[in-house]
Length: 100
Image (cartoon, rainbow, N blue to C red; front, side, top):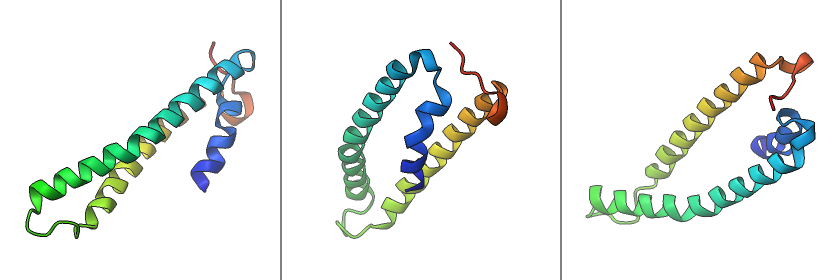
């Protein structure tokens, strides 16, 4: 829920006002495409790793889901730090001015 709460105001806080609709629609389209593609891709990857690494126990390697979740959490945290760095560079909470 914290991710969804952040995504609701993400565009309004980061995008320039003059191009907000254009940037927000592009962000929403790319977010939707990624969400649709990730579930089958991650499922296929989990099945492939399980079949290759654990051929004698199919369907019982649930820890792989947590490994993938940790990888996504680390990648998301890294991207958040990149956005935060540029957000602070362009003025932070008080004087933020989006680059055009």
